[in-house]
Length: 278
Image (cartoon, rainbow, N blue to C red; front, side):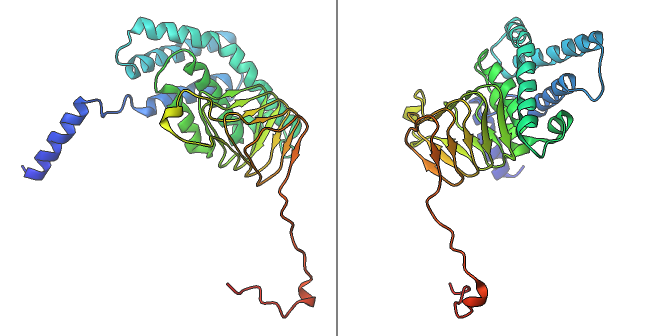
């Protein structure tokens, strides 16, 4: 056997003994999540007996995932967590319905609930967040973060599972949105693509502090706006215009917009100007 290969194998073995390993195959988690969504939003109506059976099967898979991902937990502890989570499903389902209805009521491009459930990345990211957030309140493990990063990979929308988000919540388009761990968002808030709700400073010593902004009820945040800071509060019914940068609190009913002005010229009257010079 090659000496270099042997040496590297020994290094890997030593590090793996020190927990440099995956906690679980993430495909099991994704399969469980997809299965749960198929039960909540099926392709065709199911009777109550079918739904109950499918939920019990899904719950059994969830218990197995919790037991595998939390190596030190017993099956009975995982079952207790699962019991608490599945008790919350009616509330989560109600929240999902309100999210979808709010999108339908406000987005002129949305024709029906089925379109939103099947094709809206913002809706998918929000509902994965709601599931992950519920789990994060019950157990301190990797599962919630794996769920939201799965949604992130599919939609380009990055929502930390421990963020606090009211109902309903609307994400339109969504690509490039970042919502940090200690963000608080109220009810009836709409956010467009490229928005960042982030921290002014990123230091490990601030781990236990509120680092991300608070957005109160009925706020609209347009594309590519950046709002930073744990003490920053966006007052209710405010509108944050596109490409704005906010690091201070705003009173309710504020309107923030970019001050840069576009210059409009008539090309026929200014042929002598070289627009291609660098």
